[in-house]
Image (cartoon, rainbow, N blue to C red; front, side, top):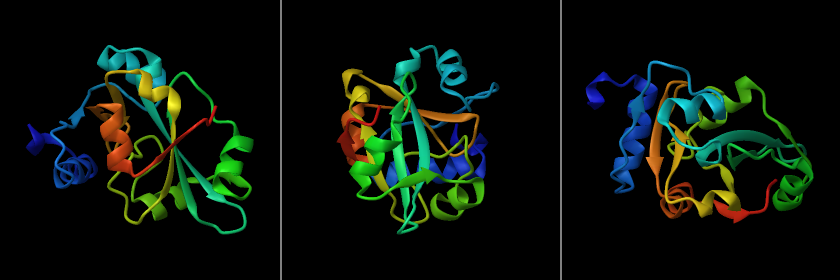
Length: 159
């Protein structure tokens, strides 16, 4: 099945395999760019969708990734407190430069460089969640514990 994947989705599939995870990246005909679209496409609840939101530390310029339940919104004050500095949403160029992926398809792993990652504690209530896999049409299913380990993220209150 992976031979039909786009280059970005293949990159995510390779990163999953390198971590020893048996997750299968799938590309869907419909968009998975928003949490609602993704939930409808895979047949799960919106809360089970992992939104990958890239922020930038205002003073350090370092990339920060918030992996957030699809039913939640990031509280930037809480994110800034976790990061130890004020944060702002990253633009498309910054996101691609620091993760290797475009907004709408940023996966929780497989980035071009290490990215400090914070994981919404609400994702841990599910048996499985769905995350972006490199394009607005690609996703993969993963257990929340594996997501935490694979992303090297810190579980926190981010909503």
